[in-house]
Image 1: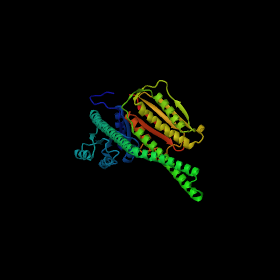
Image 2: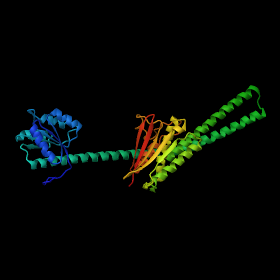
Image 3: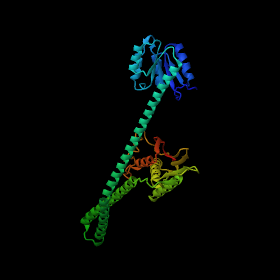
Image 4: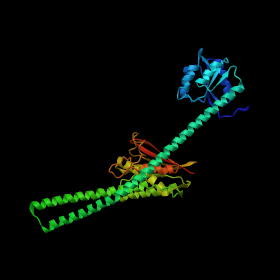
Amino acid sequence: MENNGISAHKPAKLLIIDDNENARSLLKRRLAMYGHEVISAANQSDALKVLQSNPVDVIFLNMFLDNQNSSAFLQKLKSNDSYQNIPIIMISSNDDTELLVKCIEAGAEDYLVKPLNQTILRARLSNCIARKEAYDKELQYIAQIKQGQKQIAAQEKMASVGVLATSISNELKNPLNFVINFANISAEICSELIQDLESQNLFTGEPQRKILSNLKKFQSNVSKISNYGRNADQIIRFMLDQSNTDNSQKHPANVNKIIEQTINMLMSSYKSKGTTNLPRIITDFPKNVPHIILSVQAFSKVIYNILDNAFYSVQKKYPDPTLSEVMISVKNNLTDIEIIIRDNGLGISSEIKNKIFEPFFTTKTGGMNPGLGLSTALEIVQDLKGSISVDSLEGEFAEFKITIPQK
């Protein structure tokens, strides 16, 4: 396609609005010769239908449609948020300066007078396309800035959550240790008193029975205090571990090996607790996966947290472990690595899907998880310029996709 001194642009999508079929067809053929995609409409109603389903870059609007001035329709387009930034070139059969000025004031970017001069047509179209391209780039730039600001805000929020979690956890550890220790001591004292009362017969009959009964109740209560204290201590240790997301120690690492080591670590953790209904693990790793620069400890935490949620979900759904599956696959793309973790557990409802990455959000029962796992995982992955997405069908499956750039 010849340039003829006109700035070259990528092919644009153009809309011609003209009730004269011959004029409409002639202009359409001419614009198509320039390499553009051209759509036409004979009236305002058809034009609006076209605009609703086809985003266009420039509009050619005849000054008169159905023997009526098109300035009102021009104003209607420019007052609509969806169309107001589309450049509009007015076309007139006569050089009515006053009317053309009114159209420019109403928002038209330019005008042409019939018969159309090819050089002027191309020049003014080129200017309008350049204006639309600049506007689109500005929108894209603004969207990128907003996304960046959103990510920074999320990272700052996560950093604040980490500091808060660490501070609270450290403040609670010492008094909690006292609670656990004194509960254990009290339980031991109760045990000794019960043994003394039963062996030395200091009391007999109903008094002895009541004293022994109360001591055993007290012993049971302090044992519960000790047990719940240890549970609370585990939660505090978990919070401290999750808030420690230091990614500074980064070096090239094999993602496959990290995942394999993390699976073994998680399985060992469950087995040490006496858990027997472990799901079947299915892995699909490519042999030649490039090394990714990351913190092995931090990235292992990402995989661990997602797998731990998957284990919990399938165990809640299937008492029979032969029915439960957790699949982990790695895909080596041209520019990134994809890690997909999918389970056939309870799935995630649409109501909570947008909340699962929020700090302290959890659906686990029993008080053993403060809800920092996935929020921490997201923070670590975002630090690597990556992303985590989730797909799920409630009652059927949940699938987490981790994408990490190769460079």
